[in-house]
Length: 112
Length: 113
Image 1 (cartoon, each protein chain N blue to C red):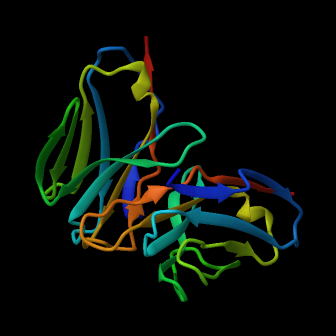
Image 2 (cartoon, rainbow over the protein chains, first blue to last red):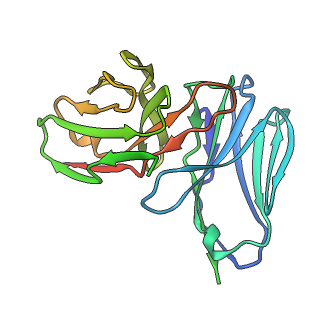
């Protein structure tokens, strides 16, 4: 079983839709949860960073962590064509860890 | 401009050849990493370095060699390339300290024929 599971999609939504991206994990020691966005032919860039359980909001993006269910989500409101990218979840057991575990990524396309 | 630069962007090599992928960062970040990205596997850590002359293995180190004689450079060498090493390779760096994010380069797409 992989440490982190993520539905690869692809996911296509119309512009303005609410997008929900999800990951599940098996290691209960994970405490730090990240979402990276990766445009085609580019490196991943950090989008959201959360610690432990709860929600974090940044503009149109909300990251949610449910440690009891070992489930994390990224919500994108009012999705834009510029949000079209692959979204990777990542997590680690301690801050500054060098053993960051990534999901396989979900490819999202927002259709104008 | 400050950032992390990988070269070459694309490389085709033959089985058995040695190939070196270059990574250079201008932030003076202490930590540097090499990942490979494959369909169905996501990003997997090959090697990382906490400082010059300090390196350690990641999840998939076999067949790879790294060195770090200067803080800003972290080359990755495939000693004898195999087809299974066909992948996209990403270099990343981060400063020490809590909550510091990884900064990725734009990758090297390597094909081993």
